[in-house]
Amino acid sequence: MRKISLLCAGFILVLGTALYAQDANEIAKKVHDLPDGKTSYSEVTLTLLDKNGKSRVREVATYNMKDGTTDKSITVFRSPKDVAGVSYLSFDYPDNPDGSPKDSDSWLYLPAMKKVRRVSGSSKDDDFQGTDFTYDDIGDRALGKDTFAIIGDDTVDGRSCWKLEYTAKDKNAKISRRVLWIDKETYVTYKGEYFDKQNKLFKTMVCEDIREQDGYWTTGKMTMTTIPTNHTTVYEVKEIKYDTDINPSFFTVSALERGQVK
Image (tube, rainbow, N blue to C red):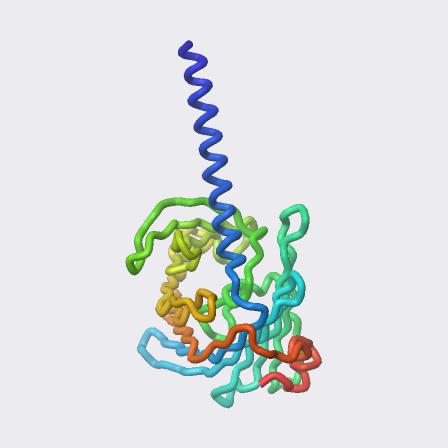
């Protein structure tokens, strides 16, 4: 009888662990698939703060459009003059049928060189134009790049959250794992911690001004800080419009080259 009891207990433990992992996967998918409209347009201010408190401000416009199962996005720098016209185009795809990630297609236009260069998958962990956000951060990171686990519960700004751990499958990834605080009701992210390959805290993220606009959950402010350099980027949405008319031709490499998107 004791052996049977132990076997049953072991079975329940394994089953419980499997269900817990399944819940983590479902949560991650709901976070990834949060509705954000067929199209959207936003005007954003990026404030870069170094360890001495010196600041640089950049004005950015972003355009997004869903084209079937592909998420297309453009980020265009409007000011200051030294970065004005720099544009980033990205196509994010759903995972492959076997669950493996399908790399996004991305291009960066540098007006000073009058050239478009492709951004490779290995560069997606690089900082985006001197900010504390990476190319992956500003895009739609594929679910297949990570494994997921719920590692606890917490309360942030009065909201009950899961602590959801994302562990990179790529052992060479600069960020080995991320822990995000996910609202249990809305699936919106409230904060995050990013760890390097040595499992040391590398970056922190704080999300504020979270509100529902036009039926979509919107984060108005994100602050990302890189711990080793004590450098911070504050991402503030000044204006956002959902389901607005956007020219589909914007989302092409030729439009970047012609400076069509401003």
